Length: 374
Image (tube, rainbow, N blue to C red; front, side):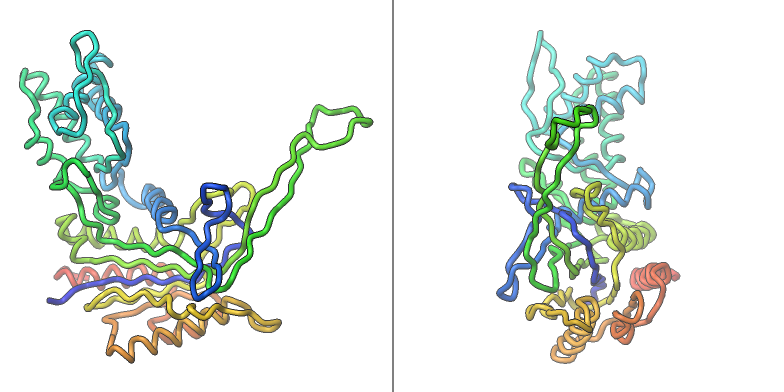
């Protein structure tokens, strides 16, 4: 059966930064190819992408991931009927949890009070609106919102972010959503050694010239790197979840923009680390996703005359051709957006275009694959 897979690759240089910290505050790392690399977790970049969606898609196309779903539902109930008291709205919202089986009833003075779910729940805004309306209707009619109704409302009208990144509900697996998108951990193409920034802060009100010393002293760990980034989207799975070809194309285009332009915000005020990729390559396949990280199993070693970006681009181009030739892989279509001469070698792997042209080109290809006019 024919498939439509979109593979997205990027090389991105980041200055001294701490994009994504571990539990000790150190920049995350990973050993690959026998050396330690800088690493930005897929979770960190997926959250950045989800936040970027807010500026690219309508709110009705997005969702909310929270344990405080009761609070969210109560607010929506109040919006639907301002005459409902805060306490009554909270009780109605809590009844939704009880009906769903996702929370046990907690009673105070004989009334169910607001509850939180035991874990983060990812629901679309449309689903939350529909649940709030159903809860209000049930209360007005003196009926109960049953579990079957909850499932029906929570398992239709999925948002783009839920469809892209999936949803797991441990206590109700039949409303789980398979993720159409996979995002790899970004790793540096070269070895890294974390460094420490020793800093002091002066107390502005310490006017006594005889009193020396800083008001605060500390250290921040950081590194700098050229990152290899990869993500893949199963267009057919996305279409199945969203149920609409136009919505699928819009989701793909928004994802490409968010993938390229978003960045995790760890210590951003300290390092002002925000950059754009040195190169973005998109290959549409009809077989399977292919992560080309093997290009960097041998770490890049810059020289006095050739930097990491240029060497990384050359390694990625060479490995792409080698893998695809060895396995008889021929992409259905390919586009490359690259910056300057250092990544020019990648232009031979696809149609060299501006990034906006790349996004539009992929969108048109998706439309054709889904049987829509480009």
